[in-house]
Each structure stands twice: as C-alpha cells, then as structure tokens.
Length: 313
Image 1 (cartoon, helix red, strand yellow):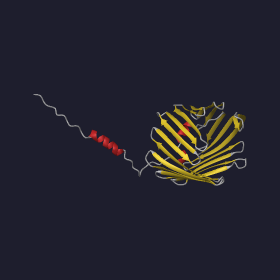
Image 2 (cartoon, one colour):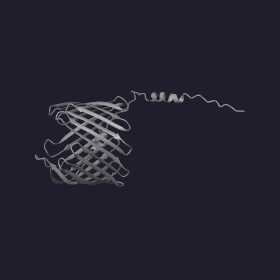
Image 3 (cartoon, rainbow, N blue to C red):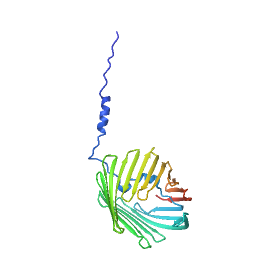
Image 4 (cartoon, rainbow, N blue to C red):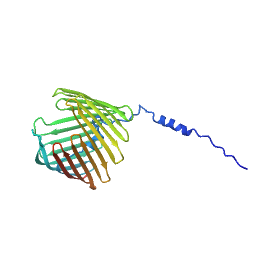
C-alpha cells in the first residue's frame, strides 16, 4: 500500500528576510557616530600619499625610563635645499642633533625637542574633562619673528566635534563637523588673521564605509581638495587626491598605494608633476626598524634618497 507524502507549503521566513533587512537598515538619527576631527578628514589619504620623506641618513633612538617618561635622541646628516632664483636646485651639506623628552599619561601628554641650532619645539595635550581637551604647540627660535605658538580647545559631542583655535599674530579660528548619517558628515571652518588682516571660510564633507573613504574640501582662500581611498584588502589600499587652487589656476593630482606586509610597510605615489616617491619601513627585530626613502622629481631633475634606523618603541 503506497503512502502519499504531503509537501509542506513554503514558510514565510524566506519572504520575511528582505523585510527584516530593510528594517535593520533604518537609520537611528539620535544615535549617530561621532565623526573624526575636522582637520583630520583627509587622514587616510595623507597616511598613504604623504609619508615623512627625507634625504640623507637618519638615526632615532628612544629610551624609556619608566612607563610614562622616555628620552629620545635623533641624528640627521644630509643636504639641505636653499632658495635660488635659477631653476636648478642648490643643496648644501648639513647635520644636526635633536634631544627630546616625552611624558605620556592617559590624560596628559608632554613632548619637548631641542636642536643644535637653538630651535625648541614643545607640544602638550591635556584632557580637561571627558569631552573637553586642550592641545598646544610652540616653536622658539633665535631668528626674529619666526617663533610661534598655537592653542586648541576641542570639544567632542555625541555626534559632532568642535574646535576653537588661538595663535600669535592675532590668529583666531573655529571649526565644526557633524554626522548626518552613519557614513556621511559635513563640517565648516572660519579663521581670522589679525596681523595680516585676512579672513576665510571653508566647508568639507566626508563619506566613509568599511571599504572606502571619500572627502572633499573647499575654502575661500582658493583651495579645493578632493581625496579618495579604496581598501582592496586588509593589507592593501589605494589612494588618490586632487589639489586645485582656483585663484592661481594650479592643480596637482596624485595616485598612491599602501601595502602592509607581516614585517614591513611600503608606501608610494606618483603625481601629475612627474614626481615619484616610495617609503619603506621594515621591522628587523623588536624595537628595531629600518627605513628607506626615495623621491624622483623628473621635471626638476632632483633625486633624493635616504636611509635610517629607528631603535626603541
């Protein structure tokens, strides 16, 4: 005797999946993420396209005295470019030594550097409250009218950031950035340079996901800056930027890459002026890094190569 098998009707779970997905994608505008600071909206592009290139030899040594206090020593030997009216680049050999002291605490950070030519650099960052912090930097030199200082007050809100700036020369500035969606944020800035009787205003936008970051910035000074970073994988990312000044009608575009390996990090770029550069940081051992730097400017026929060692963490 044959038995009939009944076929169960399709459940509503398969049809409910798209509806549940749409409900999960609803934006809660009262719980938006806090954006990054206004001055760091191009952070990912700068890290890939603007490494700290140098020419000559560099040696950096950092010694920790305890968990909060450390000393640093830096030696640099290489050519230095001097201004010239001709198209050729004039370089003179130079060398200097730099001594530094660092104090790092969860709520207070102090950094000081003094060089053999008499320049003194100092930076401080202090968390006044959970939302309000103070940052300051100063440079003192023997040259007249070359010393300067800046003070910053940063306030971090739930879904916004604001900053007030105060500097010598009657420099005043303020910026504000606000998240409007989980991925999109808008911001603006104003400044007044009382010594030069100049003022300006600027606007910026940033859109970021897990795979890409796109930013745009425009200012009344003539600056138009666009950048885009695409994350290919966990170790590889590509970046590009466009800098345009509509006052002088000058534009520069660049394209670069950032490749992170197990023991090293390689960054490189090429721009529309015919300048190509590469920067390699290789970890030889714990607390020992080897650095290679190269920059080729084919238009000016200026070629720069540098190598260095970094000891200490």
